[in-house]
Length: 73
Length: 394
Image (cartoon, rainbow over all chains, first blue to last red; front, side, top):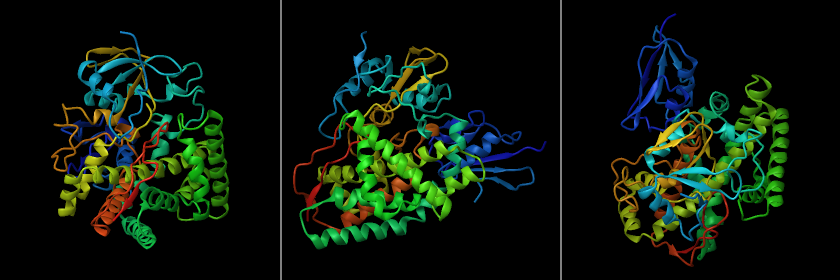
């Protein structure tokens, strides 16, 4: 299965802890902002849930071909 | 040590009760006994609050278990599940339905509408002349109008639900039967409104929720009603109270007020700092239940035990905020927990920030000589604190 890439815009991130709680395997708080534990990763719905729940829309999830999976506009 | 009675008495002002600060310094994880239910822990330091709020080993849903006897302020055990008493993945399922409606980007698009509402209310206040009550004249109507328009609650019904909501967020300010009757009225009201949205879909959040239930099976009818009630109450009691609280804070800190008037670009930072320092919470809130043994500041919380944290107490931790009791609009780093932390981080935070910024900056701009016209008394015995009235002249 093709992997997904995760990017966090640390300028936009407010460190709400939303993503680190929804997808603790994929995000950690580092100096007050979120960072992906690793990228690329195997597809996991929790990553999309985290990106869709972020109030700052600071998380970008892409498929291997570069298409944006989350957040949806 | 014997468990302390909790909650501590409510101060008359918006300050943090001194016992919290003593505990934060000397006994950061303390045993407490609430009026009803089993004993619990109270964690007062920022680092511990962060773990309790965001670590998945702490959960909320067990509070609702039939045999749990949760520590609480009221005799009856809470029995209606809301998004506030859910954990992932159920919580995520509900939250995602409306997360889009509340992003910073989407609420930014409502700024113009908020400005229009605030301008209109201040026109009325100016026309009426001093003294004016900013609670009834500005704070509550701004918050109620915006959340009502977003949800799709008709303008004509707003007086009605404000009365129910006031009682529904009470702890001791009303009797238990009064509180339960108000909560039941709110549910019945939202239930009717949901039926109405089924017949007449509109561009609002209740319609989004109805669609998510009827077409996509993403939430049950009861979850739909609970979500509507929660959004309606949380969407105006908190922000409405904070607008009044912030105006009070500024009018009683003349140096900070002068600083803000001299440099309006400080408004966003001032709002963050006022969020940090204002003790909005008037109740212990929900405890979290440990699902494994977890150590907090050297104390082992056993699986099954309950822990209370209050973000507004953590916000005074000197380990994170130098001079924590100073109102300082120039903090380089202000990672406050006024909106909570973790999955229950307030969904309306971007909306609240926008409403607070627009209300404060417009009010100061409009009335360069604003001052208090009477002593201010704060509401007690409720989930959130705010002025009963805020009489000002200019």
